[in-house]
Length: 235
Image (cartoon, rainbow, N blue to C red):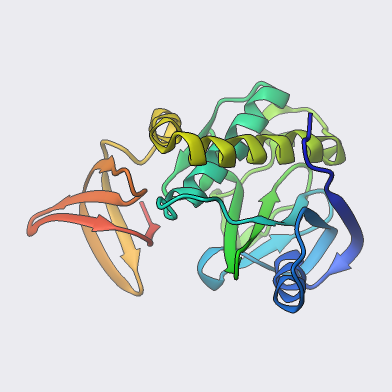
């Protein structure tokens, strides 16, 4: 079960759970708090992107302690593993991860997360598409759990297993970072493929040979090997 008792604040509509949570974390030392919204008017995705958040999805931000680890870059990867494992355990789906932290079902994005560090606190935002309507502008890039499984799921019932899974993975990261990386590599769909990585408007092409022990994408390019901390795989 959940060792921690999370205080959960539920909202009908918020601008962004992550903005509210980071604001609270900046003002005071608060931990084990979860902010949940039925919909967000300006949900945040990674790298400042907008996360389309209609009713029917799970949108939450949790404030917890920053893990005691030198492998800071593995934190987002371990959370991706946690979300993926929780989805698989609860709904018997085969989810994969696209580096660094997109959760895919049948090659389409069903969930994602972002992390803000505020002092010693970690603010972790998670968005999962359950039964919500998707932004048509995404084309076929995104999907919902309902679309992939044909089952209508009450996403409220997923909150506890999700928090438990995140807690477990963060503890694993502190104890055994190599184990978390191994679990990540087992389900990372980006490995062993040619890829284009967008880094701040610059596109790099190459072959993804590994995700190293610091969570960096290892890209073999014509000019040699690059190790990339953060970027977006465009294909």
